[in-house]
Image (cartoon, rainbow, N blue to C red; front, side, top):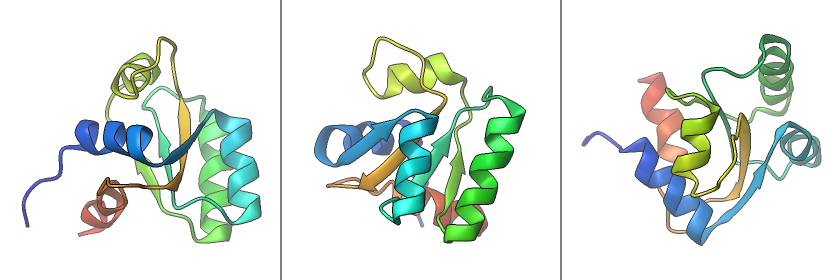
Length: 105
């Protein structure tokens, strides 16, 4: 299987799918069952990361740990602000859901 470019797939999901930014929005979507994937930046606060991982495990929602910090994740998403957490509701034309699957293999 070819290596998936995380940056391109995250950006494609932002452009063609439905994505919510931020901890509160992500948490709401996990609880509603609308989250397909949660992406966390490398410098997210430890307690928030633990809370998100617990919520995702309870809801059986996959988590992808982005290799860059929140400023880099914001840049990948095409936003002029830092993003520590984002929720993919619908991936659109992106293969972003394969990121979590390829991480497990």
